[in-house]
Amino acid sequence: MIRFLKSSLFVLGVTGLGVASAPLLAQDEVKIGFIVKKPEQAWFINEQDAATKLGQEEGFEVVRLAGEDGQQVLSAIDNLNSQGAQGFVICPPDVRLGPAIVNRAKQYGMKVVTVDDQFLGADGEPMASVPHLGMSGYKIGQQVGETIAKEMKARGWDPQSVAALRISNNELPTAKERTDGATDALLEAGFVKDNIFDAPQQNTDTSSAFAAASPVLSKNGRFEHWVIFALNEESVLGGVRASEQYGLSPDQVIGVGINGSGAAFAEFSREKPTGFYGTIAVSSTMHGRQSAENLYTWITEDKEPPANTETTGTLMTRDNWQQVREELGL
Ligand code: FCA
Image (tube, rainbow, N blue to C red; front, side, top):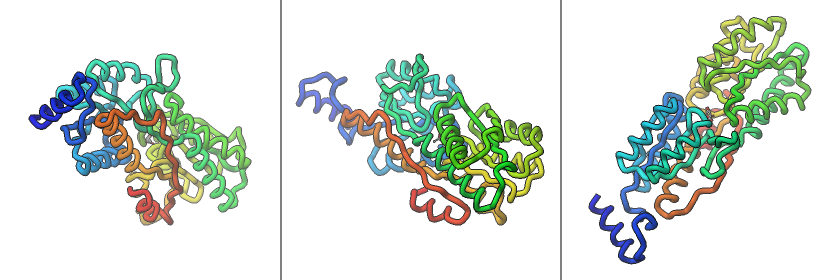
């Protein structure tokens, strides 16, 4: 703290400007929050780990917090303020909380960047004023659809015999982009449009996907083969578990997820293959590290991060998962 005061005064003396406009120096005590909507999911654990590691390397502190609903997010911000944090990275539990979160941060003079799920403004449009880093949802969705189509061909499935379980979350824009991308790629590859069935999930986790998938499978028992896709691998795994419970065998199911996190590694490590064929891996390490770095640079050098950074993915299957994991630093 003494160090902090000293260097702030130094900046004041040299520039003659008020404290508010003096950027912090890198050696000052910088503290940032990293708030995530699902702290128990491997994707978010890895993001927070990567941010913490960067902080250790560069000399700033990262406070890891859960924000599973609006109330919890607002108290997390209050908590960060009382600890003297200068800003936070957040993946919000509901993108429509954007304006409320930005207001609270402004009250405290904190900087905010979003990771993964971008805020929506009151007009329902993405809040371009908040720097964002996330996956390029539509393109990654297309990779999912192309992977499924290729595997259907490899297995020699007749398109008429195949149904798609589309586990959807249309309230969340990145989720809709991903499932739209997958749908378009499948249709382009000749998938039968009427054979696509929606299973709307309440949340972005395995149990909500399982609950959404089960009734759709039982209602459409006439199909011999199923493909499964969703916004992430946790949800595809929920669909795959539902297909097993319904009595489908792994060779009747092609599930392709998105993320490439511990949930997928555990599945690929099973002795026998399951209906979870693959996942489009994105680097959660890079997401956590880069978003924290962007915020840190903003705080210390007053350099606002790019408005929107879009990341890409790589197909990971049972055959190559360890290699892809290494390449992406996961
Ligand atoms: C959303 C999903 C996560 C992850 C992230 C990049 O937040 O819920 O699983 O895919 O986007």
